[in-house]
View 1 (cartoon, helix red, strand yellow):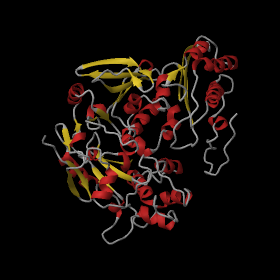
View 2: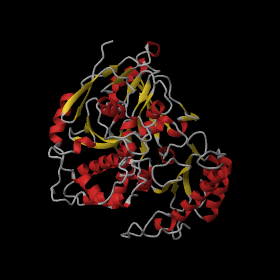
View 3: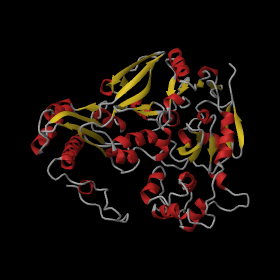
Amino acid sequence: MTTQTIRFYHQGSVREVAGVPATRTVLQHLREDLHCTGTKEGCAEGDCGACTVVVGELDAGGALALKAVNACIQFLPTLDGKALFTVEDLRAADGALHPVQQALVDCHGSQCGFCTPGFVMSMWALYENQPADAGLPTRDEIKAALSGNLCRCTGYRPIVDASQKMFDYPQYPRVTLDREAVADKLRALQRDDTFEYSAPDTRGAAFGSPTFRAPVTLDAFATLRAAHPQARLLAGSTDVGLWVTKQFRDLGDILYIGNVAELKTVERDAQTLTIGAAVTLEDGYAALAVDYPELAEMWTRFASLPIRNAGTLGGNVANGSPIGDSMPALLALGAEVVLRHGPKTRTLPLDAFYLGYQKTALAAGEFVTALRVPRPAGNLRFRTYKVSKRYDQDISAVCAAFALHLGDDGAIRQARVAFGGMAATPKRAAQTEAVLNGATWNESTARQAMNALVADYQPLTDMRASSAYRLKVARNLLWRFHLETRNDAPLALLDVNAFAFEAGAPDAAIAKESS
């Protein structure tokens, strides 16, 4: 079969790559083929951030968008038509350090230095994406930008300091990338038709030659999906990438959703927010938080920024993991999932989509095209909570979401309660909802609902939490929800969240104990 070459912009020129497996990672290509060894390999699962690079691509308006991602789990063919920036790109012709690098030196933000290039690239993405007239990013914004990078030498204070100081050097107005020049290069690389790439497997003919296909239209994607129902769907590679780097699995043919512009749209009408399946987690949560600001904390605590920049909301839902953090909130809000097979589409309530452990209602050749979320209406009380061993970048032990629609008389017209980490699938709490529906939202009702949770869930004990702990936490989260949303003197976030600080207080402020 005639295959196309992978084309991407890197270090001032367009590179063309052929003859490497479709599942070769960007990190492997950088270190082993290009000998750009500034990018490091640490965990090979998108957790430590040593491999952080910045990918540039054209947004819907044709401008250059820069996003920090993990090179260790991104497959090389996904770079086709994009730009790749690594720590080597920050080196000036005269050898001068970039302000990002100089700030780390001046603030003593590097000791062993292994993690430093990854921090540099996360900081560089923040530096480039911060509007010149917007002032300095806040420390919370800096921490969010660095959430995908781990450091065990200096600790984070000098690195956060450097992330502020990098804007203050004499080079200001800042040393910035010529975005338009890069965008021009990328425009010339855009494809009008499906990109197909194949290379012999290095282990021999017995393994075949998997093909990577990346359609650019929704109709083409649907046609290919129907024709190749066994092909592995690939979106952000934040889960599938680990199947290769950690489990050494053969993926077979790959069908990539990331080039379909029609699946990257966010649309609103009076009743519904529709999020395309290829919208990134970062953009998807940004859209959800406009209507539901209660999701702001979950947004920042869902993995890390590099993971949210690559992974998709549709992929998280289609994956069907019992600990996927997006599903409980979507279930509580009454979301629907739009499915397509060839030219035909159908819509399912999200709570009918999950049939068993990592088993969904998707038929062979069918795929998720969008999520439809009702917009806020009436007297809605909504919250979502995540409990994990680490505050940032960790997998949930329990994830909870509660949505109550109250009538004018204070009675609960509709209750939707959903949990992750409590069953084989993300699951609504039918018995608990039955207790809540029609009742008055008060302490007595909340305590009855807490007791009903035992009938809804029999969670497992695993490395993250015991069954008894999960049930206790689930009950306590429902009680916290009551304290925050009760009619009589609801408690402010500061009084129920151990990580909430007084407005304007320094980072070292002592957290309040939760009630």
